[in-house]
Image (cartoon, rainbow, N blue to C red; front, side, top):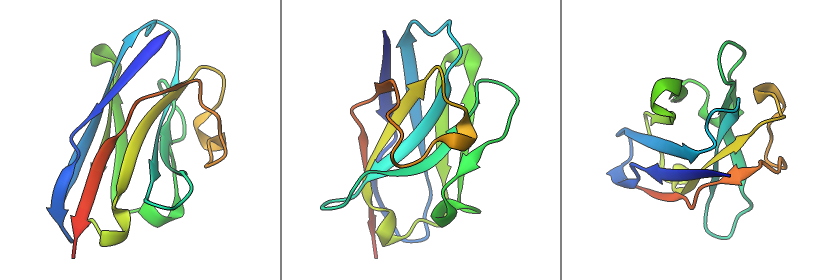
Amino acid sequence: QVRLVESGGGLVQAGESLRLSCQASGRTSSVYTMGWFRQAPGKEREFVAAIPWSRGIISYADFVKGRFTISRDNAKNTVYLQMNSLKPEDTAVYYCAADRTIVATLVSSKTRMEYWGKGTLVTVSS
């Protein structure tokens, strides 16, 4: 089992930045693709970004390209999501997820990742 705990959410104004963190614990010795997803009120969950265990292609949703950056520190079992130029439409609960079998470039909004965190709320005011 892998436990994922997100942090870093909060209330910011449009144009500001936030960095989300996802701390993994448990069976972290395995190789995992890590991803960030989000769900806005009344909307379906959507894919944001995914990163492979080590070298490989990082994947982003079109709506965050150029604004968000996903990264990971395997020594700390932590994945980050740096979010810049935030917009009110970025308001959502952001979830971290992990999967041992899928490659980062194949992660989508419909992907059923193996493990999920409970989420952290990001609110962007206009």
